[in-house]
Length: 356
Image (cartoon, rainbow, N blue to C red; front, side, top):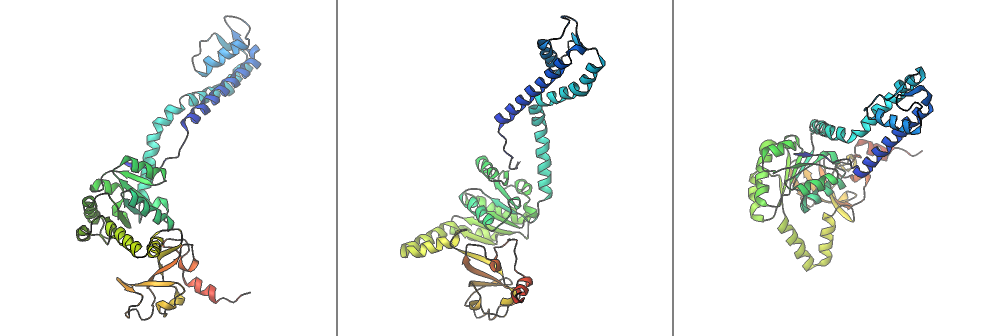
């Protein structure tokens, strides 16, 4: 089932608001009837007093209408037609507002789901919203991925509720089933991040995902290194071994606590240093990696990933992408992937433009 993030409304406040509106409408009709009491006829008691005005307003707004009090003059009938009747309709809307809201909530929800399904394209699906999944989503958001481009899949209702609370669309279901992944729009996704609690579930989810989408980037987290080959055979583009990664950082910290802190800093988003991928700027073409303004650790050329010291790099050429270590703060010439500012020829022209 698709779960969309809700707009939170305090139910107690909503009920009291309707009560006050109803009382206000009733009081307004009482005032109107009492002011024009000479135009009304009471078949039982003759003259209409304040109590009669309250009684008439109550039975009129509730559409009970016993007929013992009725407008007889033209003015009273005009007031009843022009003012009291619209107020009666509004009063009924207030009374049945909760029921109408309940009846229409499902229709509005279905309309929102249909609109969401129509906008599914080039989005990111995160399977598993546990510790790893939440951290992956937080990293995507730190790189300015919009929330509406992230869809969560998890079999745990509590995790789905937590994702909704954070503002994400979430699918409640087993990610090893094709119908669940189909609801998440995996066939149209640009990337799929799989971070389930069990390696067997990750392997099956990878197989189903690759069968549904042959071009999406699939990144999978597994607990045990022995399952890496199985996930890769299933179609994963990149596999992260959580136990090995944690063990490696633990070992580094044992050898050098400072080294462990630096490694933790590099993989943490939003503070200190970060590892980022960015496009090569036009002014950097023809340079060596060491000549760039930031620290280059690798160069992506086509399908090859070359370490910065590889003699195969030679000079950087148009189309290269570089993996850099840079401060966590936004830098115009090293924007985060997906950021609104993307370096292009205009940056070069701006650098060369004479100052006024």
